[in-house]
Image (cartoon, rainbow, N blue to C red; front, side, top):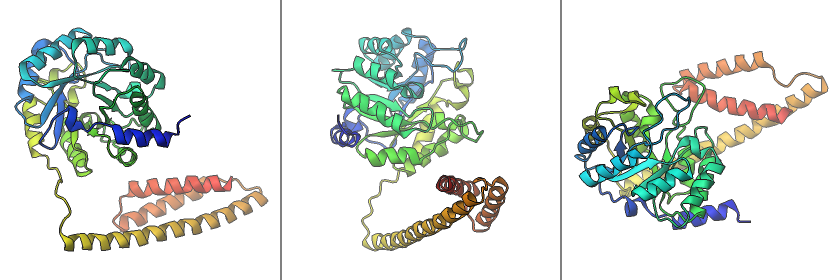
Length: 365
């Protein structure tokens, strides 16, 4: 049996750069279009507005819509594929839509759709992804893989690997955020550390950000897009509708073609290479300081766990429960007060100490 690490190495060597299957000169390069295909008129009007931007390189529209509950708009189905072809004929833009099963794949291939994407609800199911991969075996077509709804890097990697094992080499990952039961300003939490880790493991794999699904509302789309660019992500997939307020799905997170063209033009990509010798030296010195601090953090954590284990031994000897919830709440509150005084984000500090506390509990059990 192949090791997972061997598959990733082979994938990283063999994946085709995005510029080979979606030619682009400008950064960011954008895939744009409505959440759902609703009518030929809507599709053509939206596409004609989007093609005016030099950043927009492909047109997206969902023809089948996996919805959480029945009796809601679930897409127009196969007729939308004809509308995608009309968009391509009219504007020259490449086309892409979501596939969730083998029937979708077969219909898209027959209709000449240029790029396929696998949605977040499908990525969570290895069986579904494998069926799609089997249907694509021997087909040379780009496939984009959205992260799963839940924050699971393994599922995301697994879906990409299944497609690679089926012979797909034109692959890319789409970061669309992760669901959470906690209400935040985002529809889906960005959890940037997960796509960053994906990029660390597969540096050659093109990474695309979906700010529409992360944001969930128009005002946040631009800052999320800029954050993605600042992190080195060069591709964006943004939902655009000629009349967003009338959209049959995800109305709040779609922008007009005119707004999207303006947004794309405002975004700034950090492409400047670090060549200045003095600046490189200064940054290297600062990184050395950070490395020393990191080493100290590790030493302090090791010291902390030593005392945690000693306390655990005493609790066990005297039949004291491991979890002392009042003590923990008071301690966390004290940490957060100190964080605010030190100019740190209290949510960040809370997350760090929750992880440390969970490890401490584990050490004492």
